[in-house]
Image 1 (cartoon, chains in turn green, red, cyan):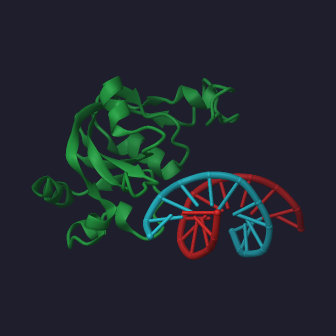
Image 2: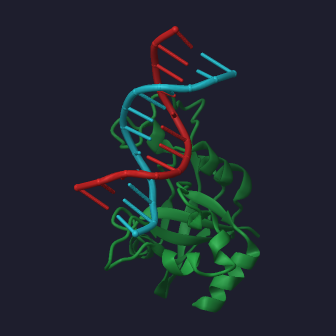
Length: 153
DNA sequence: GCCAACGTTGGC
DNA sequence: GCCAACGTTGGC
């Protein structure tokens, strides 16, 4: 069982959108490090903290809820779709290059755990998302960090 | 809206 | 294979 953190701009795709959709293919990741976590590290049943980036005063940047991996890794078809925002001309049916997993909604936190709170916590300040300049959209979370968050909710 | 930090591209 | 230039991310 592994734990993860997945980032999305709240205004682009939020935890509320996932709650509505119940399940979503996490398409559009075009970073090899993030892709490799999905290809090699994720297993069905893993839990992922759902983080909103690019927040504002009303909706601060932070962790808003929980999602769960519900599929094995599969080709990201949006890379082969010319009309898609994240189309990659190098991706083909034979060599899809980009892959993704499906996430299902688990829960929305009553109150989000803001990045400010994460950075001020002795355990959580070591999370990848709390590091200066961190742009990784998918990152591993340690069991210690995950349990710590559970106690703060 | 600013801008630092980052990943990627492409010329050499 | 280096590295400057570029486009993007994301906190503030």
